[in-house]
Length: 52
Image (tube, rainbow, N blue to C red; front, side):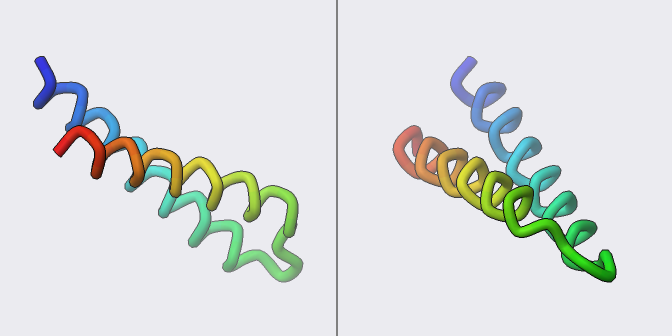
């Protein structure tokens, strides 16, 4: 069960990385969106680390 949860967290982390990259490719990236995505990505990373 924990493995499935970790996989889901890792998948979400990768998805957010893609969203950040996509936002950065825009001519005028939205700073608020980037900030929110980066905070969410960091929270996921911390949870993944805590569960390992």
